[in-house]
Amino acid sequence: MIPIKEEENKRILTGDRPTGKLHIGHYFGSLQNRVKLQNQYETFIEVADVQALTDNFNNPEKVKRNVNQIVMDQLSVGIDPNITTIFLQSMIPEIAELTVFYSNLVTIARLQRNPTVKTEIAQKKELFKESVTYGFLGYPVSQAADITAFDATIIPVGEDQLPLIEQCREIVRKFNSIYGETLKEPKAYLGENKRIKGLDGNEKMGKSLGNAIYLSDSKEEIAKKVMNAITDPARIKKDDPGDPSKCMVAYYHNLFTKNEYENICDECRKGKRGCVACKRQLISSINKELEPIREKRRYYEERPELVREILMEGTKKAQIIAKETMKKVKQAMKLDY
Ligand code: TRP
Image 1 (cartoon, rainbow, N blue to C red):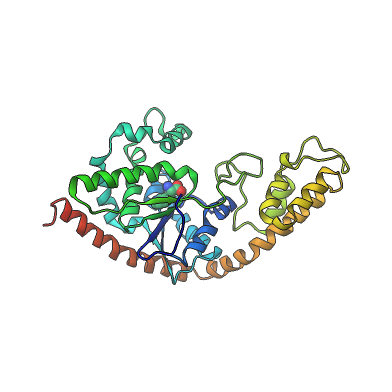
Image 2 (image 1 turned 90 degrees about the vertical axis):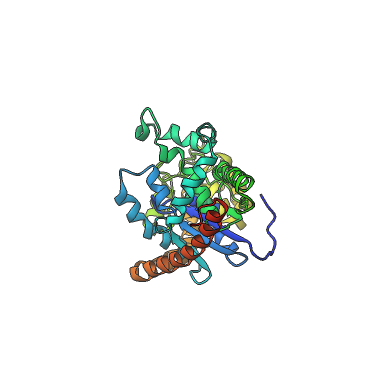
Protein backbone atom coordinates (compact mmCIF):
# COMPACT_ATOMS: atom_id res chain seq x y z
CA MET A 1 0.00 0.00 0.00
CA ILE A 2 1.32 3.42 -0.88
CA PRO A 3 0.36 6.80 0.49
CA ILE A 4 -1.50 8.74 -2.16
CA LYS A 5 -0.19 12.19 -2.80
CA GLU A 6 -0.49 14.58 -5.67
CA GLU A 7 2.24 13.72 -8.11
CA GLU A 8 2.64 14.38 -11.74
CA ASN A 9 3.06 11.62 -14.29
CA LYS A 10 1.42 8.90 -12.27
CA ARG A 11 -0.99 6.71 -14.05
CA ILE A 12 -3.60 4.37 -12.66
CA LEU A 13 -4.64 1.19 -14.36
CA THR A 14 -7.15 -1.32 -13.20
CA GLY A 15 -9.43 -3.84 -14.83
CA ASP A 16 -12.44 -6.08 -14.57
CA ARG A 17 -13.15 -9.39 -16.23
CA PRO A 18 -16.46 -9.10 -18.08
CA THR A 19 -18.05 -12.22 -16.67
CA GLY A 20 -21.01 -10.68 -14.85
CA LYS A 21 -22.47 -7.50 -13.47
CA LEU A 22 -20.65 -5.77 -10.63
CA HIS A 23 -21.97 -6.00 -7.07
CA ILE A 24 -21.63 -3.98 -3.88
CA GLY A 25 -18.49 -5.96 -2.99
CA HIS A 26 -16.89 -4.30 -6.02
CA TYR A 27 -18.52 -1.01 -5.11
CA PHE A 28 -17.05 -0.76 -1.60
CA GLY A 29 -13.92 -2.71 -2.48
CA SER A 30 -12.80 -0.80 -5.56
CA LEU A 31 -15.33 1.28 -7.52
CA GLN A 32 -15.72 4.06 -4.93
CA ASN A 33 -11.97 4.22 -4.79
CA ARG A 34 -11.69 4.57 -8.55
CA VAL A 35 -14.20 7.37 -8.60
CA LYS A 36 -12.20 9.25 -5.98
CA LEU A 37 -8.82 8.60 -7.57
CA GLN A 38 -9.84 9.59 -11.10
CA ASN A 39 -9.65 13.23 -10.01
CA GLN A 40 -6.08 12.86 -8.77
CA TYR A 41 -4.48 10.70 -11.43
CA GLU A 42 -4.87 9.89 -15.06
CA THR A 43 -6.96 6.71 -14.91
CA PHE A 44 -7.30 3.75 -17.27
CA ILE A 45 -9.92 1.07 -16.77
CA GLU A 46 -9.54 -2.08 -18.81
CA VAL A 47 -12.45 -4.30 -19.71
CA ALA A 48 -10.38 -7.49 -19.60
CA ASP A 49 -12.22 -9.61 -22.15
CA VAL A 50 -9.12 -11.58 -23.18
CA GLN A 51 -8.42 -12.42 -19.55
CA ALA A 52 -12.07 -13.36 -19.06
CA LEU A 53 -11.66 -15.92 -21.84
CA THR A 54 -8.85 -17.68 -19.97
CA ASP A 55 -11.48 -19.39 -17.85
CA ASN A 56 -14.46 -18.84 -20.14
CA PHE A 57 -12.95 -19.88 -23.47
CA ASN A 58 -15.91 -22.18 -23.98
CA ASN A 59 -18.42 -19.40 -23.44
CA PRO A 60 -17.57 -16.42 -25.64
CA GLU A 61 -21.18 -15.17 -25.68
CA LYS A 62 -21.06 -14.65 -21.92
CA VAL A 63 -17.92 -12.53 -22.19
CA LYS A 64 -19.31 -10.48 -25.05
CA ARG A 65 -22.63 -9.91 -23.32
CA ASN A 66 -20.91 -8.61 -20.21
CA VAL A 67 -18.60 -6.09 -21.88
CA ASN A 68 -21.32 -3.41 -22.05
CA GLN A 69 -22.59 -4.31 -18.59
CA ILE A 70 -19.16 -3.62 -17.10
CA VAL A 71 -18.88 -0.31 -18.92
CA MET A 72 -22.35 0.72 -17.71
CA ASP A 73 -21.50 -0.31 -14.15
CA GLN A 74 -18.46 1.99 -14.20
CA LEU A 75 -20.38 4.90 -15.65
CA SER A 76 -23.31 4.51 -13.29
CA VAL A 77 -21.17 4.73 -10.13
CA GLY A 78 -19.59 7.95 -11.33
CA ILE A 79 -16.61 7.10 -13.51
CA ASP A 80 -16.39 10.14 -15.77
CA PRO A 81 -15.59 9.21 -19.36
CA ASN A 82 -14.29 12.73 -19.96
CA ILE A 83 -11.38 12.20 -17.59
CA THR A 84 -11.06 8.41 -17.36
CA THR A 85 -10.18 6.09 -20.22
CA ILE A 86 -12.26 2.93 -20.42
CA PHE A 87 -10.91 0.51 -23.03
CA LEU A 88 -11.30 -3.01 -24.36
CA GLN A 89 -8.36 -5.40 -23.92
CA SER A 90 -8.91 -7.42 -27.10
CA MET A 91 -8.56 -4.30 -29.24
CA ILE A 92 -5.02 -3.64 -27.97
CA PRO A 93 -2.90 -6.23 -29.81
CA GLU A 94 0.25 -4.86 -28.14
CA ILE A 95 -0.91 -6.47 -24.90
CA ALA A 96 -0.84 -9.89 -26.55
CA GLU A 97 2.54 -9.13 -28.07
CA LEU A 98 4.04 -8.04 -24.75
CA THR A 99 2.65 -11.19 -23.17
CA VAL A 100 4.71 -13.27 -25.58
CA PHE A 101 7.88 -11.29 -24.83
CA TYR A 102 7.35 -11.48 -21.07
CA SER A 103 6.68 -15.20 -21.15
CA ASN A 104 10.45 -15.74 -21.43
CA LEU A 105 10.96 -13.92 -18.15
CA VAL A 106 8.83 -16.10 -15.93
CA THR A 107 9.10 -19.77 -15.06
CA ILE A 108 6.28 -22.28 -14.93
CA ALA A 109 7.18 -23.09 -11.33
CA ARG A 110 6.83 -19.43 -10.37
CA LEU A 111 3.38 -19.23 -11.96
CA GLN A 112 2.30 -22.42 -10.24
CA ARG A 113 3.37 -20.92 -6.92
CA ASN A 114 1.31 -17.75 -7.40
CA PRO A 115 -1.23 -18.00 -4.55
CA THR A 116 -4.07 -16.38 -6.51
CA VAL A 117 -3.58 -18.64 -9.51
CA LYS A 118 -3.25 -21.65 -7.24
CA THR A 119 -6.54 -20.92 -5.48
CA GLU A 120 -8.34 -20.27 -8.74
CA ILE A 121 -7.10 -23.46 -10.34
CA ALA A 122 -8.36 -25.40 -7.32
CA GLN A 123 -11.77 -23.71 -7.71
CA LYS A 124 -11.95 -24.51 -11.42
CA LYS A 125 -11.43 -28.27 -11.26
CA GLU A 126 -14.56 -28.70 -13.33
CA LEU A 127 -13.13 -26.65 -16.20
CA PHE A 128 -9.51 -27.74 -16.11
CA LYS A 129 -9.98 -31.39 -15.05
CA GLU A 130 -6.49 -32.96 -14.69
CA SER A 131 -4.49 -30.16 -16.20
CA VAL A 132 -4.70 -26.39 -16.35
CA THR A 133 -4.38 -24.58 -19.70
CA TYR A 134 -1.28 -22.69 -20.70
CA GLY A 135 -3.43 -19.57 -21.09
CA PHE A 136 -4.88 -19.65 -17.60
CA LEU A 137 -1.59 -20.47 -15.91
CA GLY A 138 -0.08 -17.57 -17.82
CA TYR A 139 -2.71 -14.94 -17.16
CA PRO A 140 -0.50 -13.13 -14.63
CA VAL A 141 1.95 -12.56 -17.49
CA SER A 142 -0.82 -11.10 -19.60
CA GLN A 143 -1.90 -8.93 -16.67
CA ALA A 144 1.68 -7.66 -16.39
CA ALA A 145 1.35 -6.69 -20.04
CA ASP A 146 -1.94 -4.87 -19.30
CA ILE A 147 -0.22 -2.76 -16.67
CA THR A 148 3.10 -2.06 -18.35
CA ALA A 149 1.61 -1.32 -21.78
CA PHE A 150 0.34 1.92 -20.24
CA ASP A 151 3.27 2.74 -17.95
CA ALA A 152 0.82 2.52 -15.07
CA THR A 153 2.33 2.65 -11.60
CA ILE A 154 -0.70 2.76 -9.32
CA ILE A 155 -2.89 -0.33 -9.42
CA PRO A 156 -6.00 -0.13 -7.22
CA VAL A 157 -7.01 -3.70 -6.53
CA GLY A 158 -8.45 -6.00 -3.89
CA GLU A 159 -6.21 -8.06 -1.65
CA ASP A 160 -6.63 -11.16 -3.80
CA GLN A 161 -4.77 -9.40 -6.61
CA LEU A 162 -1.60 -8.64 -4.65
CA PRO A 163 0.27 -11.75 -5.86
CA LEU A 164 -0.46 -10.69 -9.45
CA ILE A 165 0.98 -7.24 -8.93
CA GLU A 166 4.03 -8.78 -7.25
CA GLN A 167 4.50 -11.04 -10.25
CA CYS A 168 4.26 -8.03 -12.55
CA ARG A 169 6.92 -6.23 -10.52
CA GLU A 170 9.24 -9.22 -10.88
CA ILE A 171 8.74 -9.31 -14.64
CA VAL A 172 9.47 -5.59 -14.88
CA ARG A 173 12.68 -5.94 -12.87
CA LYS A 174 13.82 -8.87 -14.94
CA PHE A 175 13.01 -7.10 -18.20
CA ASN A 176 14.89 -3.97 -17.13
CA SER A 177 17.90 -5.93 -15.90
CA ILE A 178 18.25 -7.79 -19.20
CA TYR A 179 17.17 -5.22 -21.80
CA GLY A 180 17.90 -1.98 -19.96
CA GLU A 181 15.71 0.40 -17.96
CA THR A 182 12.47 0.47 -20.00
CA LEU A 183 9.42 -0.42 -17.92
CA LYS A 184 8.01 1.13 -14.76
CA GLU A 185 7.48 -0.94 -11.65
CA PRO A 186 3.87 -0.68 -10.47
CA LYS A 187 2.55 -0.66 -6.92
CA ALA A 188 -0.72 -2.06 -5.65
CA TYR A 189 -3.06 0.38 -3.98
CA LEU A 190 -5.46 -1.15 -1.46
CA GLY A 191 -8.55 0.86 -0.58
CA GLU A 192 -9.91 1.16 2.97
CA ASN A 193 -12.62 -1.45 2.60
CA LYS A 194 -11.24 -4.74 1.52
CA ARG A 195 -13.69 -7.54 1.22
CA ILE A 196 -17.45 -7.45 1.67
CA LYS A 197 -19.17 -10.54 3.00
CA GLY A 198 -22.08 -12.11 1.18
CA LEU A 199 -25.73 -12.04 2.27
CA ASP A 200 -25.29 -15.57 3.57
CA GLY A 201 -22.37 -14.60 5.80
CA ASN A 202 -19.81 -16.10 3.44
CA GLU A 203 -16.46 -14.28 3.61
CA LYS A 204 -16.70 -13.48 -0.05
CA MET A 205 -19.48 -11.92 -2.07
CA GLY A 206 -19.39 -13.54 -5.45
CA LYS A 207 -21.31 -13.95 -8.64
CA SER A 208 -20.90 -17.68 -8.52
CA LEU A 209 -21.88 -17.92 -4.85
CA GLY A 210 -25.38 -16.45 -5.37
CA ASN A 211 -25.00 -14.20 -2.31
CA ALA A 212 -24.47 -10.84 -3.96
CA ILE A 213 -26.33 -7.54 -4.11
CA TYR A 214 -25.85 -6.16 -7.62
CA LEU A 215 -25.56 -2.48 -8.39
CA SER A 216 -28.27 -3.03 -10.97
CA ASP A 217 -30.69 -4.88 -8.63
CA SER A 218 -34.22 -3.47 -8.56
CA LYS A 219 -35.97 -2.38 -5.36
CA GLU A 220 -37.90 -5.66 -5.37
CA GLU A 221 -34.74 -7.72 -5.72
CA ILE A 222 -33.05 -5.82 -2.86
CA ALA A 223 -36.10 -6.33 -0.63
CA LYS A 224 -36.22 -10.03 -1.34
CA LYS A 225 -32.51 -10.53 -0.73
CA VAL A 226 -32.41 -8.54 2.51
CA MET A 227 -35.49 -10.31 3.86
CA ASN A 228 -33.63 -13.60 3.37
CA ALA A 229 -30.34 -12.42 4.89
CA ILE A 230 -28.87 -14.33 7.81
CA THR A 231 -29.62 -12.90 11.28
CA ASP A 232 -28.60 -14.09 14.75
CA PRO A 233 -30.09 -17.61 14.80
CA ALA A 234 -30.49 -17.57 18.61
CA ARG A 235 -32.92 -14.70 18.41
CA ILE A 236 -36.44 -16.03 18.10
CA LYS A 237 -38.77 -13.48 19.67
CA LYS A 238 -38.61 -9.79 18.98
CA ASP A 239 -37.51 -8.92 22.51
CA ASP A 240 -34.81 -11.59 22.76
CA PRO A 241 -31.42 -9.89 23.07
CA GLY A 242 -29.59 -10.18 19.74
CA ASP A 243 -25.93 -10.46 18.80
CA PRO A 244 -25.23 -8.09 15.89
CA SER A 245 -21.88 -9.77 15.26
CA LYS A 246 -23.83 -12.83 14.07
CA CYS A 247 -26.18 -10.84 11.85
CA MET A 248 -25.63 -9.91 8.21
CA VAL A 249 -28.27 -7.19 8.44
CA ALA A 250 -26.20 -5.42 11.10
CA TYR A 251 -23.09 -5.98 8.98
CA TYR A 252 -24.70 -4.19 6.04
CA HIS A 253 -26.11 -1.42 8.22
CA ASN A 254 -22.47 -0.69 9.01
CA LEU A 255 -21.95 -0.03 5.30
CA PHE A 256 -25.24 1.61 4.34
CA THR A 257 -26.58 3.16 7.59
CA LYS A 258 -23.20 4.04 9.04
CA ASN A 259 -24.31 6.98 11.19
CA GLU A 260 -26.84 4.94 13.09
CA TYR A 261 -24.86 1.74 13.30
CA GLU A 262 -23.94 1.97 17.01
CA ASN A 263 -27.50 2.75 17.94
CA ILE A 264 -28.86 -0.10 15.81
CA CYS A 265 -26.51 -2.60 17.50
CA ASP A 266 -27.38 -1.23 20.93
CA GLU A 267 -31.12 -1.64 20.35
CA CYS A 268 -30.57 -5.14 18.98
CA ARG A 269 -28.52 -6.21 22.00
CA LYS A 270 -31.23 -4.92 24.32
CA GLY A 271 -33.99 -6.69 22.41
CA LYS A 272 -35.58 -3.39 21.51
CA ARG A 273 -35.45 -3.78 17.74
CA GLY A 274 -37.30 -6.36 15.73
CA CYS A 275 -35.48 -8.07 12.86
CA VAL A 276 -38.21 -7.29 10.33
CA ALA A 277 -38.15 -3.55 11.08
CA CYS A 278 -34.37 -3.67 11.07
CA LYS A 279 -34.41 -5.31 7.61
CA ARG A 280 -36.91 -2.75 6.30
CA GLN A 281 -34.63 0.04 7.44
CA LEU A 282 -31.68 -1.62 5.69
CA ILE A 283 -33.69 -2.01 2.46
CA SER A 284 -34.42 1.68 2.53
CA SER A 285 -30.74 2.59 3.21
CA ILE A 286 -29.52 0.39 0.37
CA ASN A 287 -32.08 1.86 -2.00
CA LYS A 288 -31.06 5.37 -1.00
CA GLU A 289 -27.47 4.60 -1.96
CA LEU A 290 -28.34 2.69 -5.12
CA GLU A 291 -31.07 4.93 -6.52
CA PRO A 292 -28.76 7.54 -8.08
CA ILE A 293 -26.66 4.68 -9.47
CA ARG A 294 -29.75 3.03 -10.96
CA GLU A 295 -30.84 6.29 -12.45
CA LYS A 296 -27.52 6.80 -14.22
CA ARG A 297 -27.58 3.20 -15.37
CA ARG A 298 -31.02 3.67 -16.88
CA TYR A 299 -29.68 6.68 -18.77
CA TYR A 300 -26.95 4.58 -20.33
CA GLU A 301 -29.13 1.52 -20.85
CA GLU A 302 -31.35 3.68 -23.02
CA ARG A 303 -28.32 4.84 -25.02
CA PRO A 304 -26.33 1.74 -26.07
CA GLU A 305 -24.71 3.73 -28.89
CA LEU A 306 -23.27 6.18 -26.39
CA VAL A 307 -21.88 3.35 -24.26
CA ARG A 308 -20.22 1.86 -27.31
CA GLU A 309 -18.82 5.22 -28.33
CA ILE A 310 -17.30 5.78 -24.88
CA LEU A 311 -15.60 2.38 -25.03
CA MET A 312 -14.34 2.90 -28.59
CA GLU A 313 -13.03 6.41 -27.91
CA GLY A 314 -11.23 5.15 -24.80
CA THR A 315 -9.81 2.23 -26.75
CA LYS A 316 -8.47 4.57 -29.43
CA LYS A 317 -6.65 6.59 -26.82
CA ALA A 318 -5.30 3.44 -25.18
CA GLN A 319 -4.06 2.15 -28.56
CA ILE A 320 -1.87 5.21 -29.03
CA ILE A 321 -0.17 4.75 -25.66
CA ALA A 322 0.31 1.00 -26.09
CA LYS A 323 1.96 1.62 -29.49
CA GLU A 324 4.45 4.02 -27.90
CA THR A 325 5.32 1.44 -25.26
CA MET A 326 5.74 -1.25 -27.91
CA LYS A 327 8.21 0.93 -29.73
CA LYS A 328 10.33 1.34 -26.59
CA VAL A 329 10.12 -2.36 -25.78
CA LYS A 330 11.12 -3.43 -29.28
CA GLN A 331 14.05 -1.05 -29.27
CA ALA A 332 15.22 -2.45 -25.95
CA MET A 333 14.83 -6.01 -27.23
CA LYS A 334 16.60 -5.29 -30.51
CA LEU A 335 13.45 -6.01 -32.45
CA ASP A 336 13.22 -2.53 -33.96
CA TYR A 337 13.20 -3.33 -37.64
N1 TRP B 1 -7.45 -9.87 -12.62
C1 TRP B 1 -8.32 -8.78 -12.32
C2 TRP B 1 -9.56 -9.35 -11.62
O1 TRP B 1 -9.89 -10.51 -11.78
C3 TRP B 1 -8.75 -8.00 -13.54
C4 TRP B 1 -7.61 -7.32 -14.24
C5 TRP B 1 -7.21 -7.55 -15.53
C6 TRP B 1 -6.74 -6.33 -13.72
N2 TRP B 1 -6.17 -6.77 -15.86
C7 TRP B 1 -5.84 -6.01 -14.78
C8 TRP B 1 -6.62 -5.67 -12.50
C9 TRP B 1 -4.81 -5.07 -14.61
C10 TRP B 1 -5.60 -4.74 -12.33
C11 TRP B 1 -4.71 -4.45 -13.39
O2 TRP B 1 -10.22 -8.63 -10.91
